[in-house]
Image 1: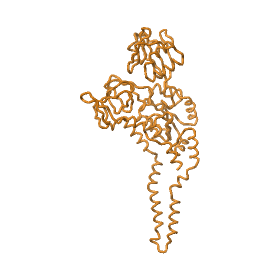
Image 2 (image 1 turned 180 degrees about the vertical axis):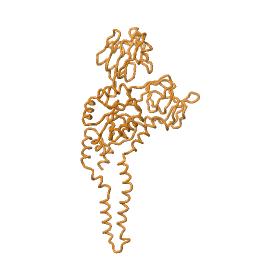
Image 3 (image 1 turned 135 degrees about the vertical axis):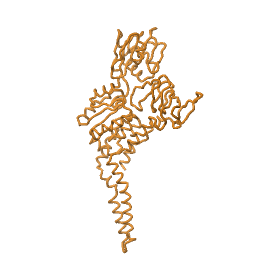
Image 4 (image 1 turned 90 degrees about the vertical axis):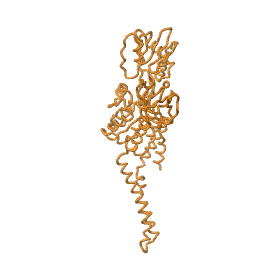
Length: 443
């Protein structure tokens, strides 16, 4: 009963995944009007329209010039990705930019979000051999015990002179002695004491088996964004060029980013505010979707954005900055005046925790959907021995299974929906309940 209660406190429904599967899709008809259709009725080759803020219901090839897409549900990457015309956008992502159109490339059954749900279910069902053996044993054992007790109670029907009360008592004794509850009662109370202790610090355990597995762990794998990093960008460096100073570069960028809702914009504005930078007045602001922003300060054109935009706007040829994070190129009067580097920093305490794991002889690995340079930087800072970057949910699961075979009993720590299949398949799945998605916590 206590274990049931502890499991009940930890279990819920995968509501966040359901939200990522819209119940209807805007199908564009032959006369260019919209028709709301259930996703399962949409055929490959049909055109669909996704408004700003809506989830992509079906995988499709982008027909619009470009699109800003939040892929964090599938990849865990904190920075929205820019898709260009002709690229395939997976279902389960969120359209954060303007209205876009797609040509459906996969039907509902084979869509990315449906495959992700199936991965979670398959991984959860793929239990260990001892657990499967116990389940098979219990399936036959319990009915046989009950049947045996009933036969004992009915012996007076076949044995002359037998006492009903005696054989009924014997049947009850047999039932009590053979009851599987004795196996449950043999579980040491220390497990429940441990579950109670960790619940006081905000950790819910789904079963005592996971406490036992924790003591036997040989390896532990981690997601990056939102798990060992903060999941939010901060300015790590402002490089001033061509006679400009850092405050001028930051001021120009802040003046432009005031007109953007991009996650990087908040990081730039926060840094300018922290440094006390005076933000100049900007006129004629223009957002170039997927590339950056431009405008005028004192009748001089200023630009802030991606390398591709800087390359187009800059009068001289420039090289791509080799950084571990995300870069914003700042131009003034068609000249590159600075580069702002942004990075998703590790959480406080992450380094200490990983050092302690190493001292305990537990091998560590970083499995993330983020780009290779960012993953390598975090792994180097935190002394994580193995790195697997640019992983989709199915890649994460496949590579984690290899990781388990290499080291033995392994745990996985994650927070995003894309981590749910791996969490379900791991010997111990640790979900970041406060900041993690409901799907990750459930798995």
